[in-house]
Image (cartoon, rainbow, N blue to C red; front, side, top):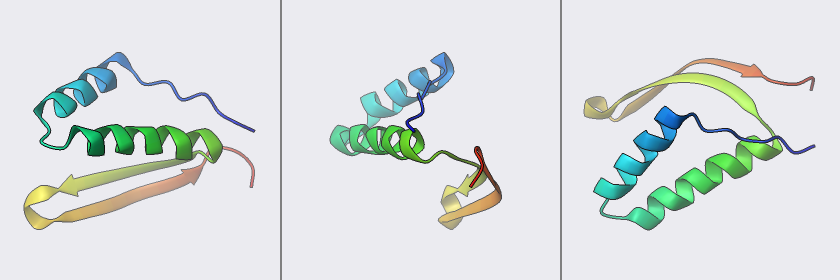
Length: 68
């Protein structure tokens, strides 16, 4: 089963801003394509926080979006 990935207008604008300011635009394109690929095949919900100064990503919650 494949899922349709829908980006909100705000997320699209954020991604465009990041892409325009990136030194490696190809990396941004590849990352967004990977998000679409993974979520389209096997979606998983999660909430996380990124603290750039500490080089840390904290995962606060994870949930399945369909029966496993």
